[in-house]
Amino acid sequence: MASVIITGGSRGIGAAVAARFAARGDQVTFLYEKDHEAARAVAAQTGAKAICCDVSDGKAVKAAFAAIPRADILVCCAGICRYGLMSMLPEEDWDRLFSVNVKGVYHCVNAVTPLFLRNHRGSIVTVASMWGQVGASCEAAYSATKGAVIALTKALAKELGPSGIRVNCVAPGVIPTDMCAGVEKAVMEELAQETPMGRNGTVEDVARAVEYLAEADFVTGHVLSVNGGLVM
Image 1 (tube, rainbow, N blue to C red):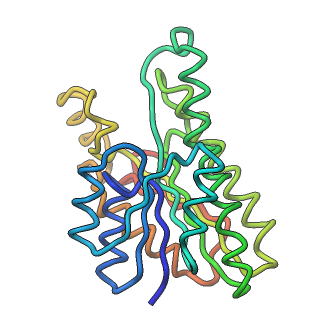
Image 2 (cartoon, rainbow, N blue to C red):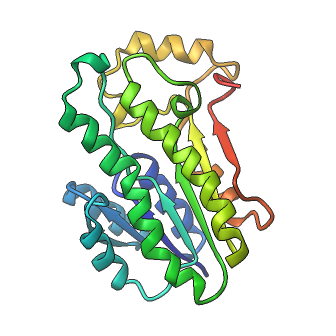
């Protein structure tokens, strides 16, 4: 039984990842920021422990991880997005995106590393996006943060590998979650038609990829695209 920590675990991909590991019998703890009702529902359904924590706050992250005695797997799912022209994006929104999407990974990796070092073993899976690989119009800031997550993943794989810690990344494609709530149905359907697999993805598709990378003992520094072939 592994001890798994998941950020952004109350909704979407994070909730699906929590459910998948809990179904295996793992001990799951997930962090969430605001949605107490959703967090309680995930905890009730999976038996996971929920901790309210803003991952952009380094002190809050340290306090949250101090309450977790053991860790084998860290999955960094917490993320936010903003749509619109970059020229119209307020600077505070740009900063908030980087604080959550990139600095959140920084805080959580630094908090979990001492727990991993005790056993000279650990697995980190970050969640980026295909837009971090190729960029998206009107999502420049989001694309930039996810590109940073990909680069950070590869750098950490080299840095932490000698300590027995693997670091990999999942780059999802179009996954209907809260982030897509503002996208018109026609646009979502068009994206599905453009995808070689003929559909958009599901949170379960991503969760299965996360599970694989979490357990693949000789895989590190890898970015696994889960986009149905939309980006190759």
